Every structure is written in structure tokens, then in C-alpha cells.
Image 1 (cartoon, rainbow, N blue to C red):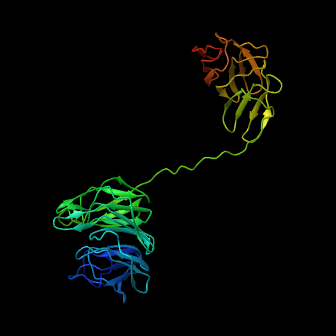
Image 2: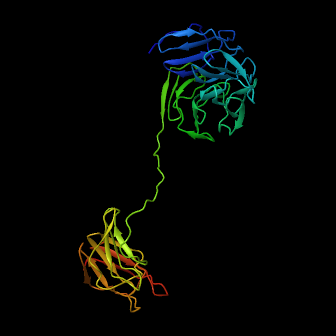
Image 3: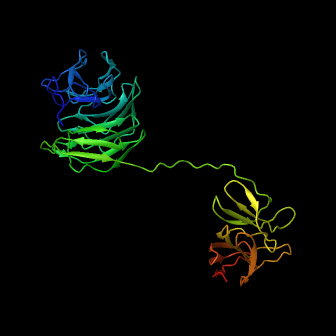
Length: 369
């Protein structure tokens, strides 16, 4: 929708800020101008503070009270100026002089300059990217696609650039995002164009107007989302009632089951149930067993235990079922063994591989009987 008009008509200008607190500076009237205006969401006001260097095709970053102006023409400028709400101050120059460059940043102490044109004719485009720390510009990793006459948005550590020109009349759709270290290609514009306007962030941006090379009113939205993965951590749970190893278990964090294993002294038939906080004793195995590693069949109230080693030193074929209270002997495995890999449920289980040496590749299926 229409907003208040600028006081000074111009083009190839730079701006910064937000919808209700904007700033615009420089540009071509013609000739190039130093005029600065601020916007309150309704009307533009001519600022008494003008740029020190009149220029067009420059870039801007920041806010209406903390802005940065850099680069531009005529020619190829490296001049940098900062605005603190009470005047423009010349600062250290860009490393690469250029015009028609792009910028992004949150304030006059934190900005990014990228792309632009360094000579013409013929047009020489650059992919050079520089980061501003409030005092100096430092060269950082380059754009993947050199271009000029595009527009940037975002902040120093999360910027976006879309479209641009790679040569006379050659517009492009390429979009790249900056993560503070590298530029990465992302979803392209639907309409190839240069000299466009852009606003927003690296994950929610708006691109509008520009040249295709004819003048266009096309507007496009860019949205990017990602799942945020929170690093997992381990926290102490309740301790087992019976210390042991070479045991097995099944279930979930809030309804777990652990049985058998090798304790002190010898094997154990101990079974314990876990409720997410503590272990309580369950019904004991009918026979002490260990080397049950890898078995995980069933649930806390419907589990299967098969094979394992016993105090007698034999590799067992014993099969037992747990009903949530007690273990009951069932039909035996066909092949006696320990260290079995087991999976499934009480009525549809698999036991695969195991010991003694040499290891076996035997696989058996259990149907609950």
C-alpha cells in the first residue's frame, strides 16, 4: 500500500531500518546526492545530516539511528560512513572499491558488504565479501556467484542476497544465504532480475520490483525453516538393586525390564522392573543365566529370554516367558548358545547368531509356543 512520499526523488539509493523506523541516503537525482531522510511509518523527514560523500549505487546497513553507508559511484568508491542519529562520520575504507554492491547488518558496528562492480566497460563483477566490526573491513569467504545490482538483507552473521546482474542485460535468479562463515546457494527467485529491493532476514525475506531487464512490479516471499536439534544429555537414573553385567533387558524408559547377568558371586536370576525413576524386584528367572547380551524381546509385561550361559558352564537352550510377575519355562531353542541377538515381541520373536566359538549363524523364529 502507498506510504508517504520521499522529499527528494531519486534512484540507486541505499537504505536501512524497519517499516516504522527507516532511513534512506545518497542516490541519483541526478546528479548524485548526499541527502538523508528518515521514515516513521507514515512520512519521510529530511535529515539535517547529509552524507559527507555524494554518491549513487552505494550499499547500506543498520537502523535509522545506527546506519552504515559504503561503496558506490560515480566510479568505484571504497568510502565508508557511519550514522549515529546525529551526523555522518567517515570511517576506514572498504578493501575492494566498488559500486552496485549489496549490504546487510544490524548497526553501524556490525555489517557485511558483498558483490558489486569493480570496473566497466566491460562490466567486471566481484564476489568479494567483507565484514565490518565497527572499525575495519576484513575480507571473508566470497559469494559463490559474482554479481552486482542485487540487494541484500539480514545481519552480519545471517544474510541473504537474491538476483542481480552478471553482465549487461544478464539478470539472474540465484539466491545465497550467509551463515557467518560461508555463502550457500538456496531456492532461486522465480523472476530473474537486477536492481531489485529486498528486506527481511535470511529465513524470511521479501524481494520486489527490479529490472528483468524491463521494469517489473513482481514480488516474491522467501521462507526457510529447519528443525532445531537440541543436544541430548544423560542424567542419572535409579540404580539397579543387583549389580551385574552380561545381562539383558527390554521395554522403554518408563517401563523397562532387566534380568539375568553375572554378579557377585556368579550368575543371577534376578529380574527388576523400572518405572522411569527406580527399580523394583520382579519375578526371578527359573534358572540363573548370563551372557544374554543383545536380547531385547517384548515388553515389561510380556518378555522372552532364550539361551545364555549357566553356573554349570553350559551354553543353554532354555526359553522363558515373563508375564509382568513371573517367568515360565517354554519350549527350548533348537540350538544351545549364548550372546544371542534377539528382537521382536513375545509372540513373534527372532534369535540370531551367538556363541560358543566358532560363532554360529543360526537364526530361529519364535511364535509364542
